[in-house]
Length: 491
Image (cartoon, rainbow, N blue to C red; front, side, top):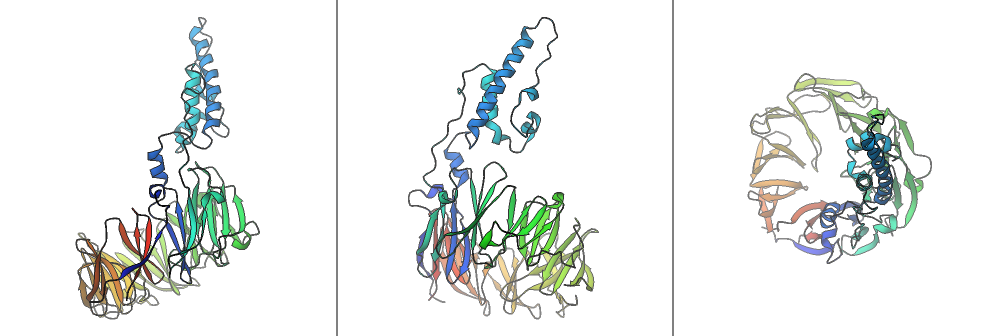
């Protein structure tokens, strides 16, 4: 066995003594060149539990309006109560509701009801004839930190730079920050969103070298950014009501690189990057756009609740599940049909061993059975026979092998033949090239296995608050209690 790796360094992403105020799982983005960006924002849920107050930014204005409305309503109700002529109608709260762009009924039924709590508190005081401010919520003291964005050197664990989020307009706990990038133009994008669903998001393009602001833009609509998960660069694509557009981070306020007009009813709040395309999810369907040009690819047949797409290099799988199970078309990038087939399950998985396409059957008790690897270009089987073992989950590939999760163990099967090579006593959750990592059967220890030999290389005990992850080719341990990131260095 190899020597167990040790922690080369630990980076504390929360100020010592203020760990509880920072979220447990920060955003970590690989910048390449042995550097990572870290966004450590305020733990809003913990703050809410620590601070028992209904106050929010805008609460006082809502309270004042609600109190005046309540006083008028109380007077109208008293007039109705004192009326002996029966000519005065019972007052309707709707007629005494003064918040702009909203009605009383729409506020009560809104998912953002708590965002108008100030009006409710003020109205109640005014209606009951209480002095103004009796039940007004007090603004709580701010947390000791709103968090920060930083870049660290992976060789030393030292900060290259660190900037507090208050410098970017995060001045109250309700504001939210998210980090995207780096973009192809070479910048990180920090998005700061206003509280309670108000339509304002401020984007800051930052230089990874020193955190300086390169450009800024305010978006006056609710918007989300499509993120390129697992990739070093990610074009900044903004999805909002009625449009999908890619921005140039060197000049966020300038003309977009491209934009596409879409039906607002088809645009949702979830979007991501996949194989060079922007995917927008809405109403159980997806829309696809070329990330470089913004054009709809020729193979995309339009939004359809029964259709799914998966891009495998130069082949696109169009999966139709309208009739139970899957009917699949293998399409060229020009939309030409290369082959067709059907199966209960089609799976595609990638890793350091490349991407594979598998066909299988559902196992009523556990995952999949009778897996067969298919050639994406033809749809033809690539093995002489099916792999007949149970597979709860296909973890991915390493050179020469496919890894299957089977309960509390991992099967290593030959990518060329489908034959079983080894069984690992544990779940391989992080796949390298010749080494895979994961927990053993009782999850008490982290283990590393040699895929070629099927043997254990080393093991180490992790605390209940520690978890293994990777940044590029490096292994890091995250500790959510201590709020640290540690580099594992093997000899």
